[in-house]
Image (cartoon, rainbow, N blue to C red; front, top):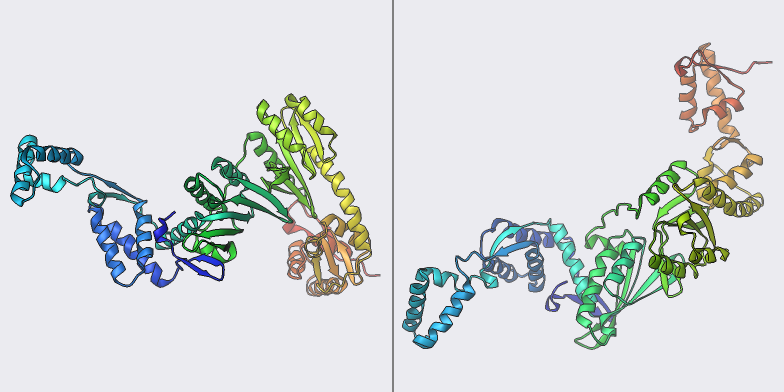
Length: 521
């Protein structure tokens, strides 16, 4: 955050927006110059840096912008007092000396007091004069500085501007693409008051701002500001807030979103996937290795459970079907009680993978809920019962998809089309697409193992293979593969089968394998 006197905003027709520093050549130059000055003046007093900031202000740059950059750099610096003595002790001695020698109303009186202190302490008059105020902010010495890049400095400035504006908020609403576990952990740790609502497919979190409370305003506002980086570290996010502009007592709207503002703020870092236990990590690794067609996501969006939220360990998605999965490991009694209370209000389908040691009354009563499917494990989570349940849930979806596809007329133009491409285009599962099109392919197409190929393209491949055989009595598998792949087909075996070609193997080396054309009648 920045001091409120350094806040720069635009305000018009009830809308308010921080006056962000664009990553322009002019702003980057200012940032570079001030960073360079800090870097080259390690060992100098802070007042030297302050003088340079004043110089930049006098060159026509907005003083609030320049001072804010300097303040951010001060936070990346370490200033020390290099006095040989304790300056506050020197000042105390001088004040005590005035009781004996009188108030120094003249230079001579002042010199007399300084001389008496020099006699007492064995310091020279010059040392006392130099170090009398050495512990004041302007006199501190820059000992260490960690320079950011000019771009990073401007992005941190823009983030700080936003945080400062949110300090005056009465309400903050945000939605984001992920990082929910860390976000709600931060919300609870910071003591923020929140509500969660679902606006399919998004989740919106509303946080009461400091100006809506009757006390703890300053502390609460700072905590809201601390939450902002956790929101903007995601790839996609939106923020809407109501700002009470104290200078006019007017309520203003503030809006920002990742598509417009992400480049102005510090870019998000990819969050590494973390697990609460080796049990969760082993399950995730084994499930992904299966390539089952289900997409596994760690810590998906929250589930609203009454006036609370539950963030499952995983979600499993396929063809528009989403099923959550929660691993119930070695939880404490209190944690298990709170978890069970949340699960009572879950309306989404969820698999609960429970350790046998926790087959207690709190969880057993939940088995009556149709939304929850229990699977128990002892030492290691078995994937088989999980896959069986997923398949049983998917079968209903698949049946409906097949019925719809059978009534749909497909107008295809591509010579080669994979089932996965068509599934993504139509929004159906690969299994349903393959089941229908293998049984009844569109007119002018024949099915292969992973898709469709037009009869026209099949005929072109046949002509190419015959042309090669006219020039050479021998056609190798390697040659055939090159010819067919050049036509956009990767399934060599299916094409050869459709054209009635056979492979003659001469050992296990594919380079020595030959292609035998069909016998002519």
